[in-house]
Each structure stands twice: as structure tokens, then as C-alpha cells.
Length: 190
Image (tube, rainbow, N blue to C red; front, side, top):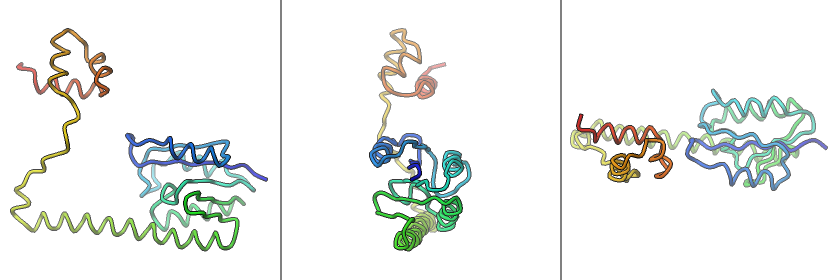
């Protein structure tokens, strides 16, 4: 019996891998590769490449959901082919896929098609929204109000006036030093 090797991925740096990692370790994965990068393309996904490289005959690559592995039908098919060529299997925890069985291989194929469909629909909606903005002069003139403010600018300025340095302010407020510098730059009466 081979090893269980886990692969966890989130799309952005501010997302957390803890839930995926716990599920993979709970399933018996001795090794878990982690990555914070978009899954729409394979470029730059170094940990995925390393994961596929260490797979050997009898091993099982385990992911929590199929979309953690990839969103493109072509990428998923290529990844599945690489796994199969190594004599390994793919196991998807939340969707109960196990490509070591015929039914698992068929189910994987269907899920891959749906993952591609979801990506295509999302892209179409984005293009629709952009098209509406371009076509409607009123929408083009509207300014996006932005999200809720996450940095207490007054607190940053007050702490700086009290003599605290940017690193201390950043740690105290749970923000980056660069954010402190930006706030100070826009409030500096220089």
C-alpha cells in the first residue's frame, strides 16, 4: 500500500489553508503540500508540480474538493493523466471520488466537466457586467464606493504623533507596515 499525499490550495494569500490541511491530515496524509495561488491556470503552481513529482506507484493524491486541484477541464484531465501514468490514484474527500475504481474515474470526469462549466459561467457573468458598464454612460460615470474601511487612519496618526514607529503601529493594529506608510503619506502635511 502506498502513501497518501495531500494537496491544499486557496486562491489568495489572505485565505486560510487550516481547514483543508486538517481534513487531509485527518484522512491520513503524511505529507501535505500547500499553495496560495489561483487554480484557473497551472502556471506558477510550484507546489502542485512538486506534489505530482513525488507521487509514485501505489500512492494516492488526496484533495478536499476537486476545484482545489484545478478549474479547467483540460488541466484536470492532464493532472488525472499524470497521476494515472505514475500508477497512483486521486481521492477527493468532499465529493467521494476515488480514481482507483472505475466508478470513481467516471465520477471524476463528470465533476471535471462541471468545474469547467462553473468557471465559464463566472467568466460570462463578469463579461456581462463589464459590457453593461461600457454600454451605459450613467454606469461609466459612477464611482465604485469601495469596501468598508479596514484601517483606523486616526489611530495610525495618533500613534505616530505619540512617537511610535511604523513597525510598532503595524503590529498593534494588525496591518502591514506598508499600510502604515500609505496612511502617513496621505495625512502628512508636507
